[in-house]
Image 1 (cartoon, rainbow, N blue to C red):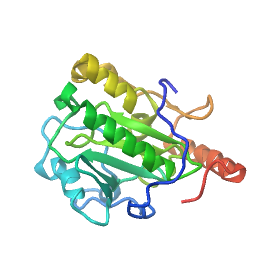
Image 2 (cartoon, helix red, strand yellow):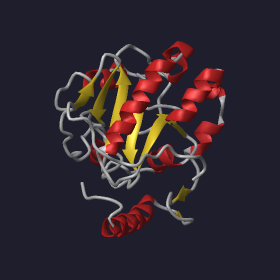
Image 3 (spheres, rainbow, N blue to C red):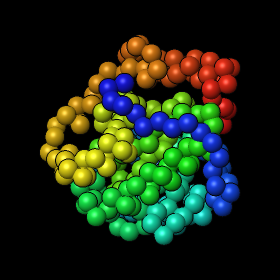
Length: 239
């Protein structure tokens, strides 16, 4: 992979948290289009210049759905991702309004650290799965959200090259790296740096071995081999 990933070993999530339900199949978009197949697509990982109120409020609405909420604190809320890109995919969001990465200031560092700690604890509850903890450089929705995602990437919602590259190139910024960027003010440069858009166009590459693929079906078939092998060796568990 092109950057250091924030992975954690796994242990036990605090007993005070709610039990985590298994991720369900990708939710269907409600908006009708000319193509019947388009209603089955997951939301993509690019945020248009003009964002509809429906899209921009999705994460804020999700934080209010009890079935999605895993744990809450005074600072943040942890929820299941409604469009999981792996067996285990969660989001940790600040309770206060922070629409974009560039709205984060150095005063938010204690909040980011608390969110990171919560993400590590959540990952620890799914031993022995590996996790990535970090942010999309160009998020698909408004409201700051920290991804906590298992590295099996086995999900019907993982459909496009953009989906894959958003987690497996430098488009994905590890949580600890983002906190360093905030300290130095470098996160404010992200929207003006064209390299982040180019990451989404890179060729499909396996994140576990040096193999490239032309299509997503080929990559996903390959990922299943890794997953089955890891389950057999005890380094991953079925969801």
